[in-house]
Image 1 (spheres, rainbow, N blue to C red):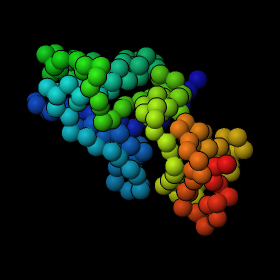
Image 2: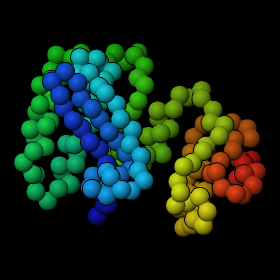
Image 3: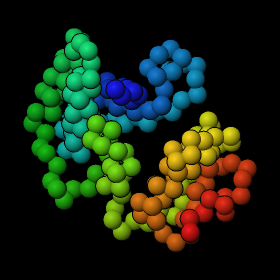
Image 4: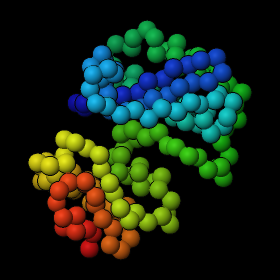
Amino acid sequence: RRTFHPKVILVLYEKEARLAVGSGNITKSGLEQNTELFFVRQLSYVEPKDAALLRDVDEFLEESVKLADTPGTQIKFVRDALASRMRSTPRLDSKQRIEFEFVSTYSGRLLDQLSGVIHEEAKITRVGVLAPFFEQDDLAAGGEDGLDAVLAEVLKLRQSQGAILDVGAPWDNALLAAP
């Protein structure tokens, strides 16, 4: 019923983990030939902020298993190893600020979650896009589901007067400016 589209690489070492989240499929083409983007973080098991992020990734893995027709054999070992490495790491104090959020559509619409992680007093003044498949012909593709509609929703989250959608295209960005 759903398309499974996330790309997450989690590598566990003795004292740290490496997390990569990105656009590329975890295939030879996705990792070696295509133009892709990955965000990589080195995370310490003993640092509460890092452990909080790893716990979010673990919840994502748990939800992913529920979608599978068969449970597989390895994900349980990875999750158990991760849990044992963070067993003594304290939970985050509710007052501690975190630098990164790991969100997925398992918890609901991504735009709603983005709204939840942007500080209430923040104002979005400009949204830029690096999306080569949408920069020219497809900006308005799909009508209500087009890229321009999605970016307009992002601006509405915390919009300030005169916010601009900058898609890096040859158009006059003033046409996309928020009212």
